[in-house]
Image 1 (tube, helix red, strand yellow):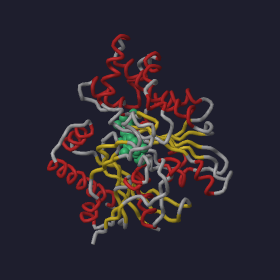
Image 2 (cartoon, protein in one colour):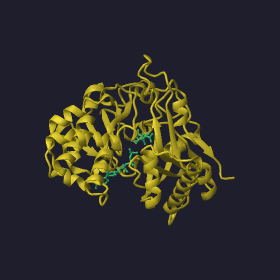
Image 3 (cartoon, helix red, strand yellow):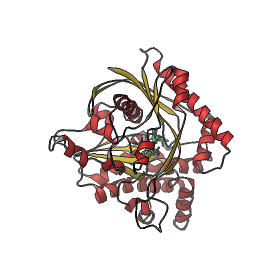
Image 4 (spheres, protein in one colour):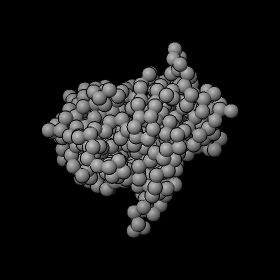
Length: 392
Ligand SMILES: Nc1ncnc2c1ncn2[C@@H]1O[C@H](COP(=O)(O)OP(=O)(O)OP(=O)(O)O)[C@@H](O)[C@H]1O
Ligand SMILES: CC(=O)N[C@H]1[C@@H]2OC[C@@H](O2)[C@@H](O)[C@@H]1O[C@H](C)C(=O)O
């Protein structure tokens, strides 16, 4: 049994999720026991600097170095805090903070080969610094090896979903709704030989999760609120279906997987376009929020109906968006009769699933187990994910 800390701050940039877990087993046959989880919000100034860089603001190399230091120190502090009152961990898996993601094969429309260009991705918060500050071996930089092998470098949680949520008879979808949404499709495990089962797993980024909703709430409240708690503001409005239909024409929703995205596409500029599009309809604030929430729900379901081999028997939500009850209800209605639950209902924290996943990815890296799934990321082969930083 290895006690591992998983750390991530996602595209919402709301803070560092830390999970303390005990892991045993090998390959996809793992036992993962959740010991503790907590979210450590970024200091206001650090969050603003990160969001500015994510929005494309230019910074000097000196500022980049300072930002990287500040993030690494905050991550190391989160690792220290989560161990208080617990037996210490011997391994850390740190995703870091994504500040830039350029998916593979996107950006050069002239070239006829869809995957001709390597992706590029940057997660700040150096693992070597976290290892030195905590005294714990730290695995980080998980995405780069998959990208070097021609993959998207995301989503990486799909193999972890496969280990934790697969069912012998049931096809399942695990739908993360963070800043960005991503899906893992898990065919029934009993149906096929292990290798064949792995090849049938699918996963990709479905598009916006909460990113547009959070930005809209900040815009509508002049920054006094950061998200639509429980979706109650959106629930008080009426979605404009004509706008949703129009927004659904966006190329990303029609791009077949493998695909990944980020705030570079579904960020501030995208929201401004949406607001401009909405002007002729004279929507009030609640209607605008309801319409953006509808886009998140409809785009997820559009992805399912367009690209899954078949609809799953059950869908399990995770990520902060699973707490948006209006969004959850809309997903339930649109996917009827498929039940839409949360991962909590099968015993794994919806809030800390991503942090747990990076603990598992670090554990796999330490075992020397190649953990990307080429059918998900589009990589040419399975590779070891993550770089190991020893503390001495
Ligand atoms: N009670 C709630 N009601 C509605 N929305 C919520 C609630 N709690 C959290 N959220 C939403 O969840 C978001 C954070 O989700 P999460 O932490 O899963 O995202 P992330 O991990 O940063 O993103 P990603 O998975 O794309 O990397 C918040 O920004 C907010 O929009
Ligand atoms: C580049 C990057 O950080 N991508 C994130 C982001 O947040 C959600 C979605 O886009 C996802 O696919 C990915 O993270 C998760 C943890 C993943 O790799 O599975």
